[in-house]
Image (tube, rainbow, N blue to C red; front, side, top):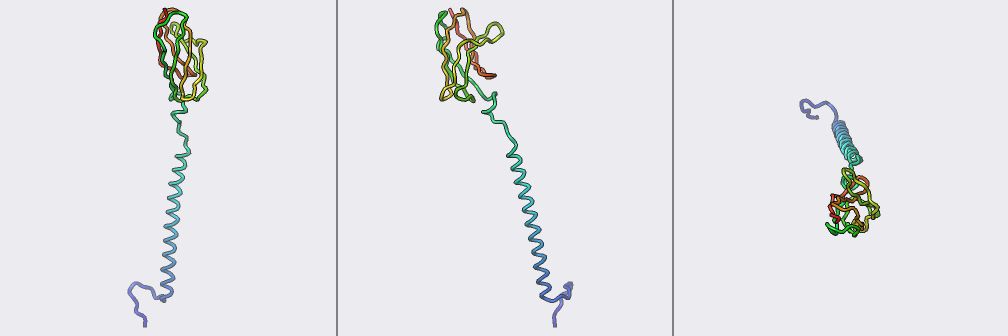
Length: 152
């Protein structure tokens, strides 16, 4: 004779084991599916945020820079002045030009050079206009600080 526990059905022992196994399998599958869904949603969010392009500072023109130094701050008219410096964010071979300020306007002079290995440049120019010359090196929208050379 079988002993019945209150609240238990009158099923046989084999049926109870079968029901218990089935409910455990269903719960395990449900938990696994939920875990997979959460992991997939998290991975998709990560991929979506990784796929969003972020501007690279080195690729933008605002991150590029040019330094300049004049070999002399005072020369005689017709003498050569060498402008040297380094660039940042500009590829090797980029053409740089020398500009001077006339009134409120910057004018490009005939002197130019290219960025060399190591991101450096050197440019020679003869200055003929007497007086204080404000000069700078330029590439596209990227300009160096102004240097002044007095031509006597």
